[in-house]
Amino acid sequence: MVEAATWVQGTLLGALATAIAVIAIAWIGFRMLSGRIDLQRGAAVILGCFIVFGAPLIAAGLVKLGEAGKGSNVAPAPPPEPPPPPPRPTSTPTPYDPYAGASVPVR
Image 1: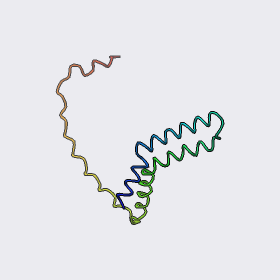
Image 2 (image 1 turned 90 degrees about the horizontal axis):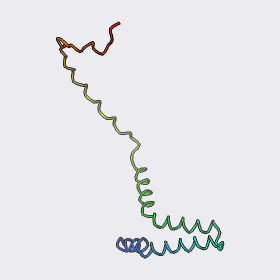
Image 3 (image 1 turned 180 degrees about the vertical axis):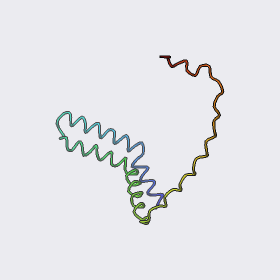
């Protein structure tokens, strides 16, 4: 059963299906430009192609959404508090700096 579904998916989303979809969209676009098909019908065909080729992604999203609802309603535990930072080393004052006040003008 899984192999059959994989074959159908490969057939519907393969190179031949992509070529047919490109030709269909081009044909619909040409007929819309010539005024033979209204905008609503053309948009429906293009939207249908997007849905067909996006079906695996749409299905995966729906399955993931369904699995999220099966979880328990218990909130996860909060993360542990980080350890306190290590103490700062004491700095020793420099004994002499000849340039300490050089950037400040004397008034």
